[in-house]
Length: 167
Image (tube, rainbow, N blue to C red; front, side, top):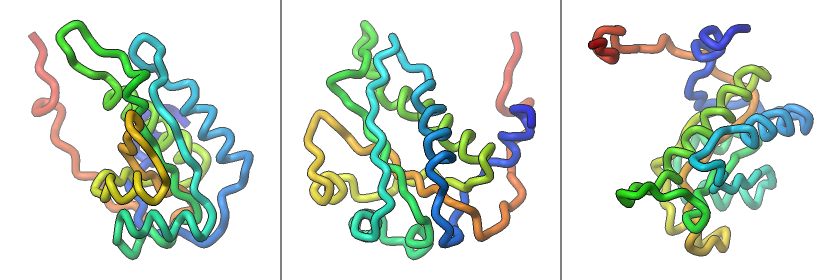
């Protein structure tokens, strides 16, 4: 499958089968994350794999939506602020770096027949408390991953002329 087909296949899955993700598929997805580029190659990230019932229940205290409980695994993606590159004007690039790595994760998962969803609307402070995460690490994204139990809806995308300007 080419990249355009893969990007069309990937969607925000919000209902998962109970089937566990095979370790070899998870390893493949995480290797794709490891290969993601980052500013000055700092790789200022940490990915925690949450598959235990206890861990998943803790995450449900941080993001109280019923659908996330269907995911057999949730990946917690954090920025390591003490490792991120800072541009000369003070712009921190950890948020950009984690976004690149997470999208590598989502595309690799789609290639492997797995569903994912970016979850950014969660209680970060509660997450840090329950998982004993201290500054300068910041949990930025939760990514449920597993076999989809729903079907993707048609993607509503802006036309090219609204997103791309040529001079």
